[in-house]
Length: 246
Ligand code: ARG
Picture 1: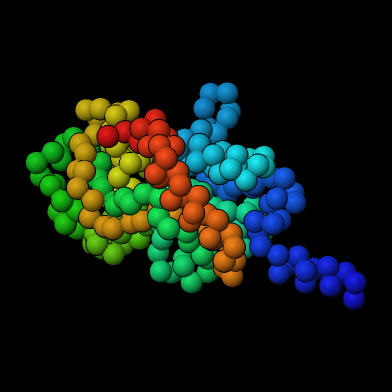
Picture 2: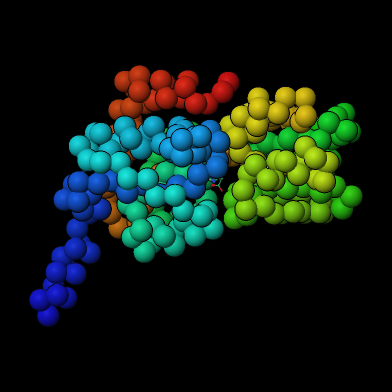
């Protein structure tokens, strides 16, 4: 009974209190989604989300603990307390929002397209790709994949476990187009130059937000106030200018 009471007390506690008690903010993300989270040559995690997470931990006065987690298991990992928050460029979708809570969006993006150069002029919008003769790539379990299935249902869709592989498939000519979040395509375009054609007009509306377990208004309140503060005191702008190419 005593153990059960302790468990009950813990489960009633806000994640915020647990983080403060532990002295650590455990942040879940999946590295590889440039420029939000990636691994540098030294093996350190860097990017827009990582800098924001460090800023957040600093504001709480706790240590930042990165938890790199495969995308397809990231929501179950949050639900089973492997970390305190997802900061991983996650789009707020109504389906995900049934399981987890989202803070206010920290950036709004949409799906864009990187094409193999041989299709320059032939394909000018996602609608032109809606034909079984075109192979389109994106990443497993993402809104990129959902957008292809919903808006380009007739194409030959090929799913990848990481973004770089999916874009390389287009560069090496095995696929025709890569569909993904705007800032990621901007980054790949800058990296690969003339090897890809960039259709940069987003065809979906996607707010990205930090996700936490449901039923935790204290943590949610802290996050939204923190976000408003960084967005207006220059910190957001500094991080944005450092990482998001424009
Ligand atoms: N915004 C997209 C989604 O929510 C892609 C995010 C991918 N993030 C990552 N760290 N791999 O589905």
